[in-house]
Amino acid sequence: MGHWVRLRGWINERLVGRSVGLSLLLLLVLVSTLVALGSGRYAVGFWNTLEFFGTTLGLAQMEADQFELLYSVLIEIRLPRVLAALLLGAALAASGAAFQGVFRNPLVSPNLLGVLSGSAFGAVLGMLLGGGWLVVQLMAFVFGLIAVALALSIAHTFGKGSLIMLVLGGILSSALFAALVSTLKYVADPYNELPVITLWLMGSLASVDLDEILWAAIPMGLTMLLLCLSGRWLDALAMGDDEARTLGVPVTLVRYGVIAGAALLGALTVSLAGMIGWIGLIVPHIARLICGPSQCRVLPVSILLGASFLVWADLLARSLTDSEIPIGIVTELLGIPVFLLVLRRTRKSWES
Amino acid sequence: MEPQVLCANGLSFKRGQQTVLEGVDLSLSSGDMLALLGVNGAGKTTLLRCLLGLLNPSEGQVTLEGKALSDWPRHQLARHLAYVPQAHVAPFPFSVREVVALGRLPHQRLLQAETQADAEAVGLALEQLSITALAQRPYTELSGGERQLTLIARALAQGARLLIMDEPVSGLDFGHQIRLLRHLERLAAQGYGILQTTHYPDHALAYANRVAVLHQGRIEADDVPTQVITVERIRRLYQIDVEIVPVSSGRHALIY
Image (cartoon, rainbow over all chains, first blue to last red; front, side, top):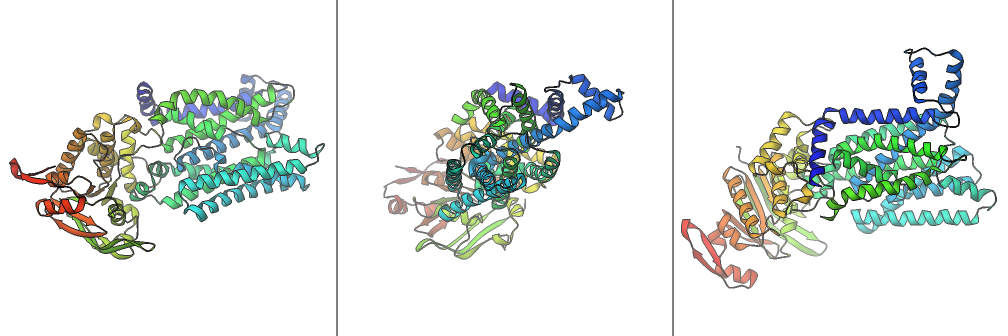
């Protein structure tokens, strides 16, 4: 551990401190994006993909026929999906990192306050009521926020909003909405509705379209930016409420602001792509291994790593087998070994 | 160094029907090394939290430089008055330097990166407590004494002249306790005002230049150590018989 910390200190000083580390991560995101765009039933080589974008930017020349073909494959067919993976991966990782900071607990995931369960319930209810896709998404979003509001009000009614009561409120709210989802599944028509519901709950990026992603990118991008800006406050908050207050941090504002932001991100991801687990829990851990525990660095690094992670997970989901695997399953299967690797590194610092 | 004064006037605090503090007057000035004695449940923690502006008293008020704490913006207050909690375990393995650098928060704008002045203040604070060598170590892997020094360094990095400390020596071994008290004594000599709660009348006798006794929510004595710590008072407060004997260098020792 000592060696690792010293190495990390060195990396921070030499790399992240000089923005080289951040550039490397951006490069990772870029390369992941290009690889994902090129892969699929009609495979386009990495250099061809690069050439295509070079032509778009006027830096290279490509035959018009081939350009049009690649345009329809890369931009029209695959780009929405890859963009969705980038955006949702970043959002889930940011929301997890922020939750872990505000609850002072590295084992917290974005679902702690029930936002994912609430959204799932909203979406399923929307499907059963026969609403269109837009109705389903709206319901998912609204119920995600209702679930968080319920958790917060339980915490306030019974425990003056203390951390432990927030966690308990979250467990109750999450359990309630999970039970409601089961109820809806039970009453759903087992031949037509149930398979749709079950598949949707496993998460998929197949049905997102470009407009949706671009619209969602605005609130999500802003929220992620605000979360990144509150990094230093979150560090102080990790030391305890009284200490943070005496260091001049507006504790209540930061806590509820961050909860609201993280809940918003969670609700939006579920409404766009269903339940995608594990990213919010593991990506911040990998980020902490790379850049140390300070939230000022953990948040931006998590965002970049989360984006790449979900792009790769989605790539696996659509290319491992002939038919698509739900992405929630892929992130879970990928997440468990990654988490075990991370645990090997971090276990020691938790136990002390 | 400008002298600064923190003053509690007629402080009362009620929790439901129970009176925790009643008519407490207490002041802390630059150069004070004030030990606050009191048995468990005497209201020490409540008093500290009122002095830090974390709790609003039911009656009376706390002022810094003649201005009520509630009228100070929080980040301004943090540049004058610091809280040093008992050494705790942080949930994330921040480095010692990162913990101390949190003390610069009240001096920083939200977007501003660490400035040269911040870096110097952090370096100086580490030096003052002789923990420069620990700067890159994870805070979570330090001993209790080292963690306590880190938290004091953070208070110095804040630029605060008045430090409020909650039982700084509790949980430390003998060597760390005495070394910590000597650090505090040196800081007081440099013009810092230090208030620490303690369960050790012998420490108060040896290292404080003022001792206050909080008993059943009231300050029942506030004077130089030899006036406050007497055989009779120790017997009444703690039901223990002791002897107080003068030793060399004008100090007194408590024998039990």
